Figure 1 (tube, rainbow, N blue to C red):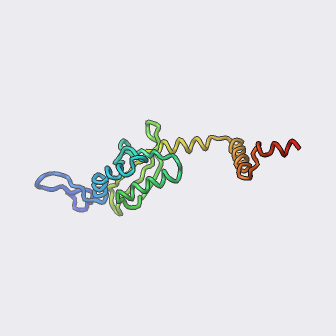
Figure 2: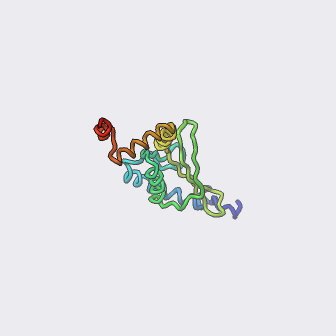
Figure 3: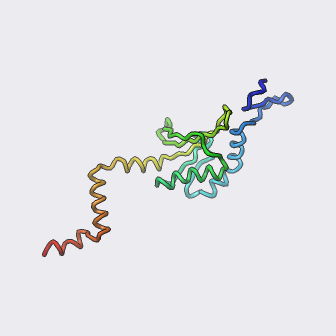
Length: 160
């Protein structure tokens, strides 16, 4: 057995493999505390522990800042360090996932934290598909409402 392999060490007595890298310790930490995090956020989250795509945390929040903030809150509560990498993954089932990858410096072993952001993503796509004309009309109507210039208030002015 090579001595420089930080990922695992094989014990001669039992023949079992033990995780010794940072990823192994982080995974143990996640497994110990994910149910507490889920219970605390039960109105915003489903699933867990998020170590694979199949067990991803399902984010129920659909607004942009709150959904992203929730991901980072979960990772903070699981005492995970800052992620080395984050990427959007579209699964074979068509669902959208946000995957954060953690890896210790010089280690080949890695831990992944998965979040199912399909609800948030669909809401975002819906906003993108509005036509420019619809957005322009909405902005004009909003300005009129802010200025108190709704059609009802203008009717008397236009009839004079």
